[in-house]
Image (cartoon, rainbow, N blue to C red; front, side, top):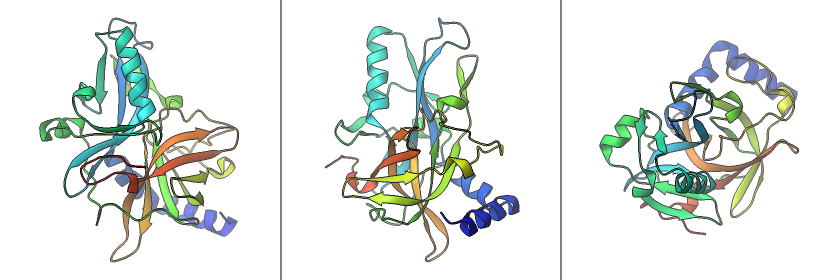
Length: 250
């Protein structure tokens, strides 16, 4: 991203426009985490990821990264009394899996409407489904709930929704990558990110493209599945891999 573009984004941040976009992106997401309440506070939450609620026109789906779900299953196998949360509701996610794909690292869940309401998430309603594939140089906003910012209070997760705005660095048939440009990135509170921050927990988080027609809007178009601290890259799968019923195809 050119310096003039970063300056423009800084201006929009100060003007209050980007905080509104950040809150809109956050409103469609929730932390996906699990805990053992027999453990002491501060050590009860085992892991967390991010989920995004999307209405495809046929189904309302919670979309996340499959490796997050696989870790939950592994932990629950060891700790059968483990409790799992999607936002504000306790869920047994294995009961609601629509599709899980190890190769693409995407999982979809179809929850009853009462559970969706309990998550506290505002469902994202894209114009059409599936969305167009993200292309190189498209401007996107993306993020999640990194473990770096995670704290506990009475077994609940208290964490920031962290976002970045950048352009797609590379796009292929099955994934995109985005360079984070950490030197010029900030946490929501305005603190500098610092070198090689831990973004674990952002897996499953959304990538939204900016649409300007017919009006300015955000469109869910990708699912984060990996980040590289060494190379300052985030990798995401195209949402085109998810059918209207939530089935994941390569």
